Image 1 (spheres, each protein chain N blue to C red):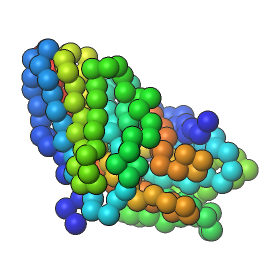
Image 2 (tube, chains in turn blue, orange):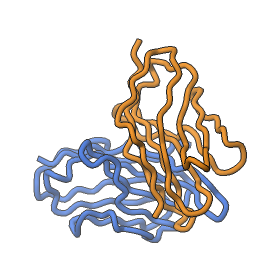
Image 3 (cartoon, chains in turn blue, green):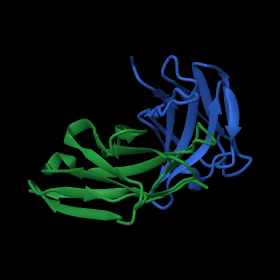
Image 4 (cartoon, rainbow over the protein chains, first blue to last red):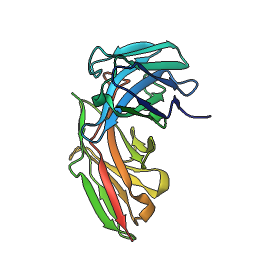
Length: 116
Length: 114
């Protein structure tokens, strides 16, 4: 298995531009998570999906952030418009979930976003 | 609410010495507990987990963790540290009531010196 795939690996953009981050979870996994990591705030959960449905988006910082999961093998995290304070590493993770399962999350390599 | 705490921002240990990275948790009911490691410029990698059964859990790279229900702790241990173990370590708990959600600790940076 190729693991969780994220693209792009690096993104440099200017303030005000739209940014789209992409994630392909591991085949067979039914939960998907988006995290943001910064030195100041550590690892933050932004949103997670179960069976393609958003379950909890309370971690999304503001309306500029949106996430979609149109099918079981693809998700996007969009920032529009982007701001310098959005600069961070964004991770996608997936897992299998269900009653009685204590399955771990598998993380992608991350997208390092720099907003100038 | 479920939560984990990692009381040490950084742990320093000499190569060959035993290491411990601390984690305490707060959950309702029986916890699902996890340890992850993050090397520079990489994603988090799963090390080990406690679901049920034996309180001593063995994982990757010679790491183990001990679940202690009375102390609500899940400390990560290794008998003999390697320089290559230097990384950022995260403890996490899975919310059984909200089965999908993980709560991660703030992370502990482990420095192993030659």
